[in-house]
Length: 263
Picture 1 (cartoon, rainbow, N blue to C red):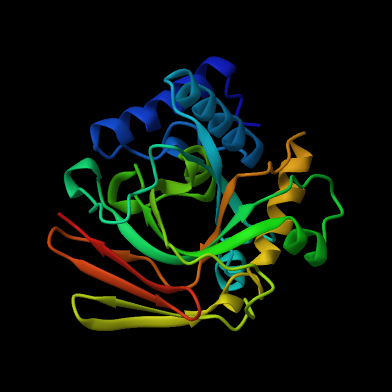
Picture 2 (cartoon, rainbow, N blue to C red):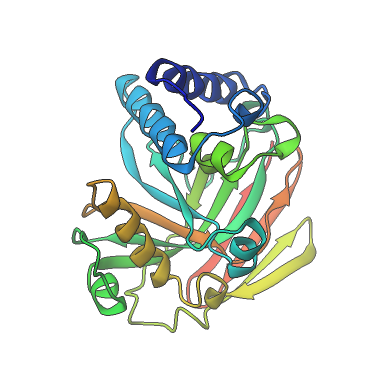
């Protein structure tokens, strides 16, 4: 037991929020609380969410992390992690990423789901996840750890809302039944260099499995996935460090191209 108190949890939540708002990295929380548990880390994330809502921001969905089986094995985890999305995170169609408002941003390609029905309970399957989905879109996620040198434990990451920073969604909306999501190919080009490619199966064999896992994890906390919420299902390609002047273009089979400029 770490013995972390409710007051200390609030302090941890406020510490990571202050780092995000000031664009200044901080030491890992486990340096102060070396036995911080996953339950305590999610409790800190819950406090963080409550404080953001009290500031006037609206929670609009979830982002999934640790959806690669290789990463799970490396960290000794058997399930992904999740964080919260807020209405200050989406970038407009032609809106650039302002580097000065971040600490050490990186970009990932993802398939985003937008829900038309709520999902709850421990027994969600693929059919239920797809039926509850309104549409899928191409997406970019900009992650930005608030910890020094982007180094952190899984517990630190959860407490820091798993590095959630900004998202960009494409304009082409498809039913999840209109394309083979496991085989959907994605390429990322940075500064006119073809950097990486992958396909939807990189996310738990099928990105809808990320929805299933999220709903099960939320159920354990007495929560559920709501209609209208966005779910970033996890990285298809690696995360790439961004710098001022970078031009990113992600190309998604069936979902079109998604550009991002860094200024």
